[in-house]
Image (cartoon, rainbow, N blue to C red; front, top):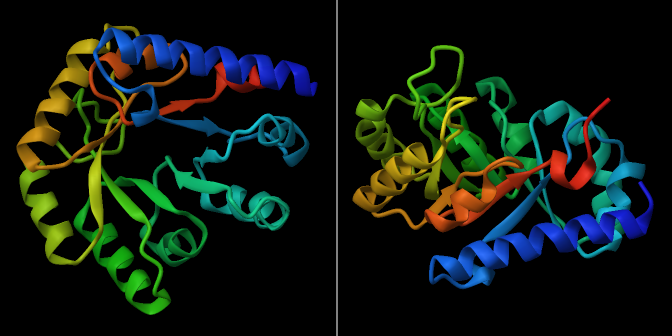
Length: 222
């Protein structure tokens, strides 16, 4: 991907975030753009870094571990977020590698993360993932079970900062984003990880603090 293409795509996404934020009476700077770099090699990521992007998201611990240590040695100010499902046996690796984990969704993972943080001394921010559409194939805690899981995460000492969700495909995402925002307010949480390439502007108008954009930045994956 040529550098000018990376620059123009990044500028376009930021302009769209800015417009959506201002429409909602928000400050554009309150919305963090996570560039979803899963399946993309380092050579495809570097043009975005050179264009100024510093926050990236990965779905899998192993894939991130294979490519990001070298990149972060070159660009030490990069921040890396885990946005995919996390197996409990990968908790220590995730804590060592990532600055935030967006997929905390069950008691066993809370216990594994708390242990890993105690051992490593690192404390990445944690988002509780909510299965906002009640879809059996997706990760995330059920809406009705969110208060209990949140209590468990806080009791374990996890640095919970917000909620994350992926709405069902093919339907209007706005009601799901609005529901997650309501749940976050009720829980006293200020951060919302919602919105992807197709709906991040809607997410921004409804309170997103983190939008997760892959295809619109990198193009369609092979």
